[in-house]
Length: 488
Image (cartoon, rainbow, N blue to C red; front, top):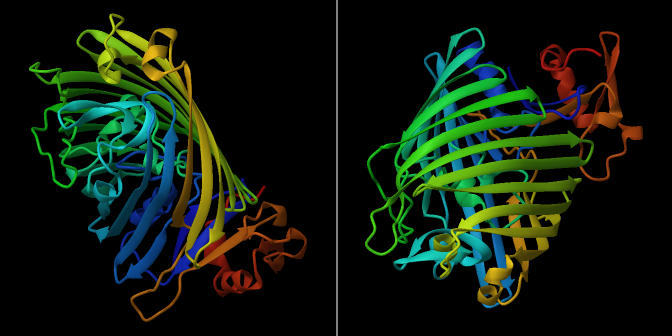
């Protein structure tokens, strides 16, 4: 029997996914349990107390997982640089992992249809900047993602005790630089609009050529990457390979299951195109971030605070980001984002003598989810924003404060969705939520802790979301309880 910890809500709750899967090594089994909730984009980490939005299928020795997020949105920004557009922001990721030798092999492939679903040089996103399109700097728009967002492999194995090593890379992958990329941050998940600080924090999440090595323990990780730091061109359907002549390093620390901290720095060789006939520009980037998750009964709260600094052509610019969301019963989500970024005349493509402008953007919104199928959630949402520029840019933008709105339909996996079948012929992977206190259970909407199913085992009472969960627990209570937190 293999038992996987899927997530935790408070000290007395553990969600247990059980299946008839045998791992060759106990060390690989223990690692895989924590890696499920901790894994972000690339080799980045989320807090251990993270909700999961994915589907699982067991095929022989391979565990197959699928993540996706798709929006059909209408975006309208006001002002002289505003625009309207109907489009779709989307991505689909598949993962396959299995034991190999003493460690674990993971393969990933992630693709986006945005080369076809986002018209022109990107969707309206006032004050966003970065990359080029048709020979000009992209400004006040967010460029589409490339079709091959990630094609990578990772091998992870023990060294001694809790110490492990990790090797990761591929033709399209993410180096060890910055926080979890915004499409994969829980704090950004319900928001279809990219941050305007993207190119100060996590723009390297699609890099065409990456090799990363790292070592880590239970609460920390140190890693470094060699990669191609050049920005992709405006042909979004191909690979833009280049020399692996950029370098980065990153350190992670997890002081509690609810918090993930990172500090990283990198030198991106020829990262950005120069102006006119100027050569490409190198960029030195430093980032720091803290991500906080709190999962409790019917509630998921996620926040990220991040700082990024770019140095190019002997001048530096800084960016601050604070984003947060609150989801109740996997149905009602409120989200918000505040950013303050220094941008140059080149970033915003304005004619000015001042080298840097402090611009700000405030955004907030709401999404109402419904169950589309047993495994997916569909939602209808809306957002409003205010892009704020200094007085000297008001004539360019029309006014100092430029409002924007967005309405959208969205589709993503339901929280903690599991749809698994073992190779032996159809045994379903069952999720069992077990708690010492029924009020600590996180169950489907409408669950009443006062009527929670329960059982007494070895002199102690345990509570469950349903009688079916209780019955599954009773098939092997010793194994299930081995994954419970210590008794309080």
